[in-house]
Length: 373
Image 1: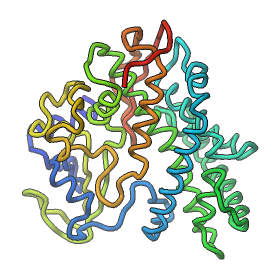
Image 2: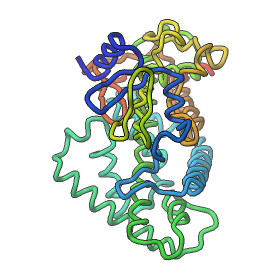
Image 3: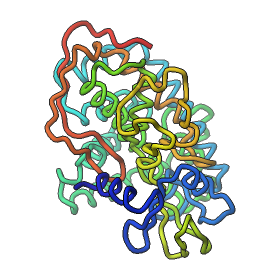
Image 4: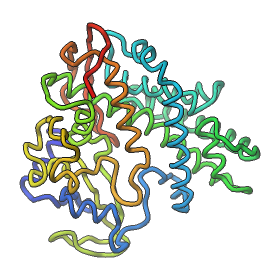
C-alpha cells in the first residue's frame, strides 16, 4: 500500500479530517481545507509554499506579489514569442518514442531555459540541478552527498550572480535572475541573497518540475484512456483534479484551535491534502474516474468548493492559468490520443514533495495534429 492508498484508507475509516501520525493532521474536507489555506481568523503562521526558504520567508507579501507578477509576465511573453518554434521543439524533444515523466520536464526546461538562466557556467550547474534534483526519482539517481555538493555550488553561483546584477539598473528584465535581483534592495545582506537564490530554485522546480509533471499526467491519463470525452482544457483540468502535482500544503498553527472534532496545538502540523479534497464524493461524482467531459460546461458543479490544485487564498499560484494554458498548447501539437501507445514501466506514481506520474514510454505515430480545443 503506497502513501495515497494509505490516505484513502484513513479517510474511509476516520472521515475527511484525521491524524496521519502523532502531531500531523490531514485535512480532506473542502470547506475546512479552504479555511486553513486562506488562514481564516489568522490561526496559522504566515507561510508561502513558494517563497518559504531555509533562511526564512522572503517578504513582505508585496515583494512576493511583485516578483510573482513580473516573473509570470516574463515567462508568458517568452512562451508567446517562441510559439512559432514550439511545434519543432516538441517534435525534437518528444519524437515518436519518449520516456516519461522525464520527457515532459526536459521539454519545459528546453522551452524556458533562455529566460531562466544565461549561457555559461551557471547554466551548466542549473542543467545538473534539473537532471539530479528536479526529475522524478532524481534523489535515487545520485548519492545524497553529491546532491548536497551540487546544491551548495549552485547556490553560491546564484548568490554571486544576483549580487553582481543588483548593481545594474535594468528596466526590462531579460531573465528570471533580473527579476529577482530587482527585488533585492540596496545593501541587501548575504542572507537576503541566499533567500533569493532559493526562490530561483523554487521557480526552476515550478516551471520545469511541476508544469512538466502536469504535462506528464495529462499524457499518461489520456494515453491510458484515449476514448475519454471532453476537450484538451478538460483533460488538463481533470488531470489536475485526479492527480494534483501540489498534493500537500503544510501549515503550522499560531494558536490552539479545533478542526472538526480534533484539537490542534501549536506544535502540530496541519496538512491540507488536495488529493483528498479533489476526491470528495460529495462534490465529485465518480471521483476516482478520469472524466475530462465533466469540465465541458466550465467548472463542474461542486468544483468551486473542492478544486485547489494551485492552493487557495492570498498565496494561490499567480501563474496557475498560464501553466494550464501551456500544457494545453503542447498537447495540441501531439498526434491524436487514438494514435498513442502508453507502455507503463511501473504503475505507482512517484510520491514526494510533488506527485509525479509513473515511468512510462509514449509511442506515437501519424501526423502531429492534436486533439481539438
